[in-house]
Amino acid sequence: MPGGRLTQKDRQQIALGLTDNLPYAEIARRLERPTSTITREVMRNGGPTGYRADLAHRATERRVQRRSPASPRGAESAALPHGRDPVAVAEYEERFTTVMMQSGLSNKMMARVMVCLLTTDSGSMTAAELVQRLQVSPASVSKAIAFLEGQALVRRERDEGRRERYVIDENLWYQSMTASVRALTQQVDVSRQGVGVLGPGTPAAVRLENVARILDFVAESLARAAEQARDILYSNGGTAPDGGTAPGAGRTPDTGAAPDDAGRR
Image (cartoon, rainbow, N blue to C red):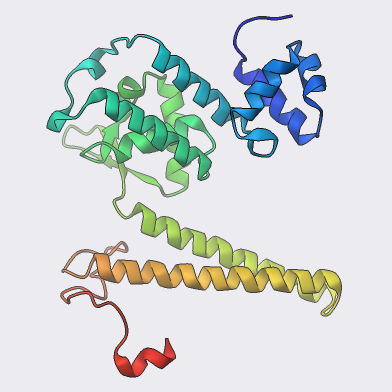
């Protein structure tokens, strides 16, 4: 039987086997591994229902790195600004990357680039800086940036030296919430279209209408929360995420409606 650690390809095969409801013994047979290896791998990485190959592989990489002596990484071995602890920062970035992957950025490189920009004081980096910081190829960075830019998560700017920099917007989370509202609204619309197609009152139509009602409620609540957060966070003369002055600019944030509005809220 093959020895050594499981590869990312092995983990992808494990994930496929779990999706097909194969027993651990069958997955092990296909990979020519002991059944105990597959059982241990699955149970330490989310179990049969929560196992994800990319996250499992990343978790294993982190465990190996913690057991291995730290190796210098060129410029990265230099002291960090503001007296930051390099080890603590590296561990935090690993945790943040994993959270970003679990939140939807399933590609590891895209998540790493996002975290890199978020944790940089300037909020912007050149392609060369990202390559050096992440120790990856320029092509990997370019592909990740193209995806993030397509999702409006980063934008390109030119600095004084005419170098192209990739910038992360400080209003990212507001923009992400509004994008989620748009996506939910589309799902509401298409669900309600199905009601007419399948025939009002039929079991399938009733199911779709219930889905539409739930998503509509969530979208409305999320949109209201995003606007309230914008009013509060930008209430002291700041610039709103859309580039204008926030509706609450210049006023002190309050905690709720006036007494005579209480019954309508």
